[in-house]
Length: 262
Image 1 (cartoon, one colour):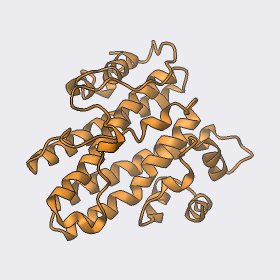
Image 2 (image 1 turned 180 degrees about the horizontal axis):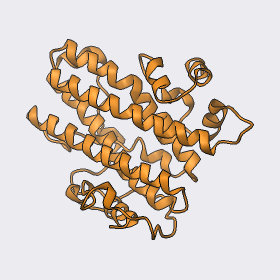
Image 3 (image 1 turned 90 degrees about the horizontal axis):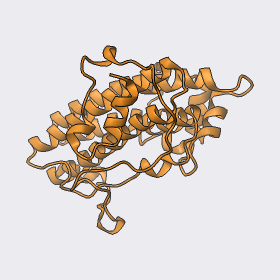
Image 4 (image 1 turned 90 degrees about the vertical axis):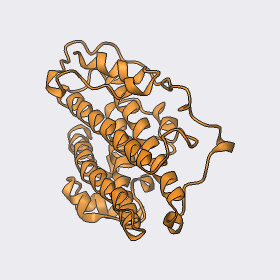
């Protein structure tokens, strides 16, 4: 299967099953001989019951202290699942938006898309095990709102991998610890899975930032310059800053210190 064909199918799907379809034969079976012409961002279709909700109908994200309640934990997991759904849709769009990008870059995006599909499924299964269903609660368009301002692969790397995914280096262990404290080991275990994968995703972003940035600017200067408007560097960190995870992902000490202080 051509990479573009798969990405097009995922991005334009109007049912959840199609958004989660994987290449027959896996990643190695994909070809990238016909990447096509770039497409501009438009919000992708969503099946009935999974459309973005009006702001007035949305719930506030649960406060950490409220996670003793299973209802609040489900609300938290539901938000994370929606983030994964938006992320997989945006990964598919990036493959369609940047057909002239380096072939290795595109293959890396395809691998991360598979990870996001898996993450979404894991969240959905966990929510179901708690007697609820993904789509029971209102959905936001948090990631989508920034997509229109991403115009090249460097913008993409800095906004998606080094902002949203880097923040998960802090959020995942923080919520994992809270879930464990409140006796929800299944949710804590899933946070560990997400955390390990996010180290790899941030590492992908770091490698490509180093390759694509101008030689005369630092990693952090390039990152700061290419974050999407409305998504400043402070969004790349969470409640408990994980220095070691960032070092493991390849970010240098200067970048890490500047992000801490931003």
